[in-house]
Length: 320
Image (cartoon, rainbow, N blue to C red; front, side):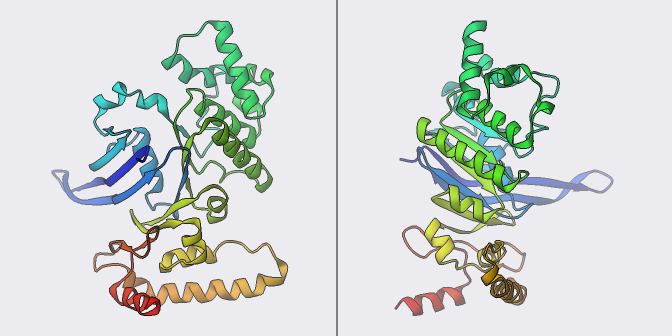
């Protein structure tokens, strides 16, 4: 049984207009998505800005109210607010934010920032709390005297590690990581990601890892979903997505991964231009008349893709 299940989740924002401020349309930020996260697993959500992936993350931690659908944690539907407190959901599910500076209160010392979740759920003496904060800083490779400093005294990578320390302070079962390394240099990204993997191994934490960077997601996630226009276009394992991408949008994202080899740079650039040309020509076939992503079709036990019927027939013919 999955630790958390997202079932037909929808988050629609009303558009109001006219003299009477009536609802005339909706923004379909999330429009019917389904996925499960197993205990100790990192599940990836990938898509460009505005695709709806961060909105899903906020709904999972309770910062966005779903229009409909269910978020089931250990068999309990936590879209009902009264259920969250019964099962200590707010303690078990924490979040790492994209902007490390704005997510840390500039007027508070690091000790108070990290200790805030602890104070919400536990009763510790001053000595116990100081010891616990020191242990959390040590887990993410920060010196103990960091607790007496302010956020502006640290680099971006250090602040993100402090954010991770705060997220793990309540011994959570799931952490929603929303673009946790996108604002960092490549070398610092590697440090932060390695800390996250180390913490996962030691504490058996699950991650919902949200990113637009397919290279980073490949390093972190075994299972993932590609998202655009509020819906999933492709779901699969790392091997499904990277070795056998079937949706035109997934192929476009993969072609955009920068080449690290000078020897293949020109060939990669030519491939990227070819995929972009195909995407522009074929894009309309992968969406309905309203621009909505088509329904997912089961390709294999682990692989689902939102393909038009013509492409599905071709695929079946090739497998026959």
